[in-house]
Image 1 (cartoon, rainbow, N blue to C red):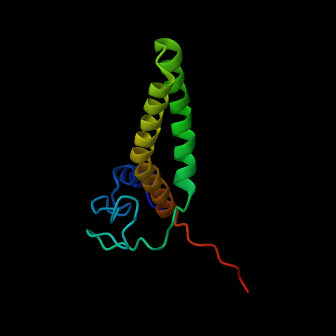
Image 2 (tube, rainbow, N blue to C red; image 1 turned 45 degrees about the horizontal axis):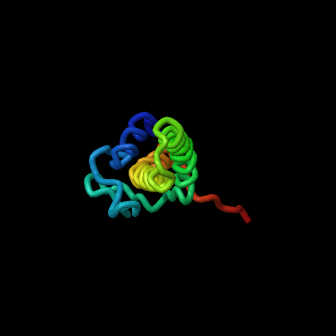
Length: 120
């Protein structure tokens, strides 16, 4: 098992969990096939919908108080509160998705997780 702490740092930064130097992503949320620095194969792991679930939980926990404070403390019009809440939610989701995806990928890498197979 690899060093989990180093893999997590690499995941948060969007770097290769093996060497910590190469880019993890080919595009915004598309994980590269291999590391450009060390050649590590990234096709072995897939975080699937896991990061989305965690982002929904975190963003929801932050967005609800944000909207409540805007409405109750400042008495802003509903259309302005809704717009601010939507922008806050979308922006935070946009920022957190690659971070959570990188962290879950790094955890899979550090623990050597592979696709499940049935033995026959």
